Image (cartoon, rainbow, N blue to C red):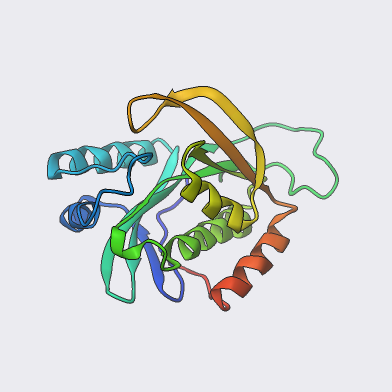
Length: 216
């Protein structure tokens, strides 16, 4: 099971999600909800408590590692995100040349998802740095083989942000899930492989201005 970890960058700190920050999360989620058409973001306190409790239950099962996003510029919690759908590949495999080999105690592949930001933090670079911190941890500490990112196919803003990371569009899965607007959602699937990470990392490093990643 992945250990609790805090990931610190230049302007963002990803802190373990907990019930202690419920009120801050509710305040962030209700600044302006007009950009949440394709994203499920809890509104009231009861909804947020259920949201955090569900995330912590999945963490206890080793299926997710959820974070609260603290924007150091304002010292406020401005959203949440997670490393999720953690898979642990066991047993010998015919690993391809150049791969990291078998990983058992830490995830072998993961998704990044459930990301949402307060209106004030959108378009500020907070999302990009948060993704950089999680990608760095996944590829360099866990040594995962793949990170998957997904978005409602209609969510052009989220898709543009994922593509700006350097992720590869694997395709669109039709009628994939229930959308945030209660329609049947088509989902765009993106991925970054371990062999692609050095190029992606260099690109993000340049855009962020040399962020130093620390784990605690």
